[in-house]
Amino acid sequence: MSRGNVLELDLHTGEIVRRIETGGGPNGLAEDEDGQVWVAQNGGSVRPSKSARPVAPDLQTLHGDTAEDAAVPGLRAPNDLVCGPDGRIWFTDPGSPHEEGPGLVYAYHDRSTRLEPVAGGIDFPNGLAFDLDGTQLFAATRERRVLRYTWDGQELRPGGVLADVPGGPDGLAFDTAQRLYAALPEADQVAVIHPDGTLGAPIRFPRGTFPTNLCFAGPERDTLVVTAARGGRVLALDGVGTGPQTLVVARRRTGGG
Image (cartoon, rainbow, N blue to C red; front, top):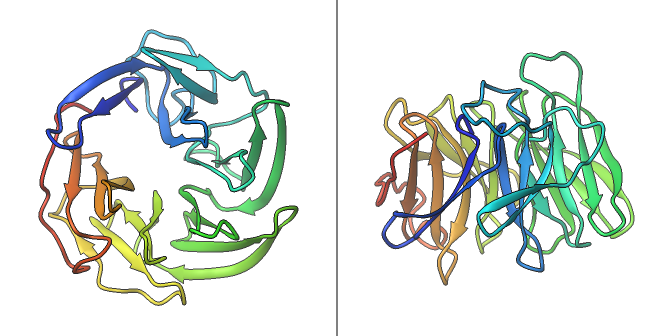
């Protein structure tokens, strides 16, 4: 984020395969149903960008070695995003961490360029994830909570608090057993939340790791990949989606911030 770059990594070696300069501050990443990669671009409002490419807060798509701005007007600082069950790009826009006032969750249709606010009044909405059925949406907030919403294909309805976690949650991801994982930067751990909202044993990292975002990868989707902001590392933990929930060993890392 601080260098305005998106890196493509080889999952097996951890080596950088491709570097795309987006400018500003690329935050969340998501692939849509057509294989297109989308970027939540905060425009450098979270921290100063070392990139010389000027860019406003926006959504972007990656094409080869270049990034294309979607030119979505009126955004403050998009943070994280996901491809929804309806094919739209759903994303959080909390604004800068230094701004006052609640943030929003939007849904964006790239073909019609229609932008729809779907949830508001949230104290700094951060990570975002649909469950495996595509009927529930979850949002991380600065209040150390994960909120739940119900999606019926037409309307998003509030469903209350799924869980309170020991630290402000950042990125969210589901494993194949419908457990929700939440990166907790200040707690140096990843919370494991069962479907009923109870907390399982967390995945703990050494002090100062600062895990910010995460996803599942591999043919069985049981390798948990975590971005560790302190030290500019990417950590891959094998067997997490199907094995013990107390795994703490990082298998791979890559340098750079």
